[in-house]
Length: 265
Image (cartoon, rainbow, N blue to C red; front, side, top):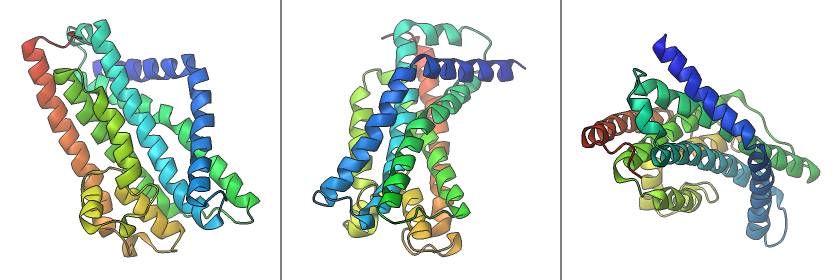
């Protein structure tokens, strides 16, 4: 019951923060879709080309989600560290796992509105251009892989900030890496092989984006994905990242507790 109450409290706190910052959420639901349209216009040399709207949409939805989810968890941790709230949490009987899981769930939910706004904008633009947004239930699998892998990445970054504190630049640079080399805007198949392989290996959203494009654009099944490393890696990569995130967070958390630096800004 302690675990359940702690989880519910952390998740509830995150959702209350989301509601309190509804103006920020509304602004993000406007700016991310505009950014998507500007990217398509730039790539299409001033035109909303139908052959770009859907491929870029799939990458932009994933990019928006990972940006929002990771940043909300990271900045929440950093804020609690600087205010001394996190140190007080560790002085209670509350299992740290409950706090971590509650934060992750709240961040996932908070990232959904902006991602849905991008999706709705893309669907509207495609419809106005005379096209149709394809729907296939198989995309649930790559979407779930993106969510799980992103949570693992968030754990890694939050673990690092427990010990090193000043790593804000990493989260900012990571967004640029996802956008440029993560296959969000340009398919990995069009990139140099070493970069594409590295992205498939470590970028949580890369295999999921490739799979969604194969399913929705190419009409392929999950069992016969022509690009990337197939269904096996699509399922394995987020699990490996999450396991690495759990292990690394646990290790860095113990280091911070033994040093007594959980509340040091």
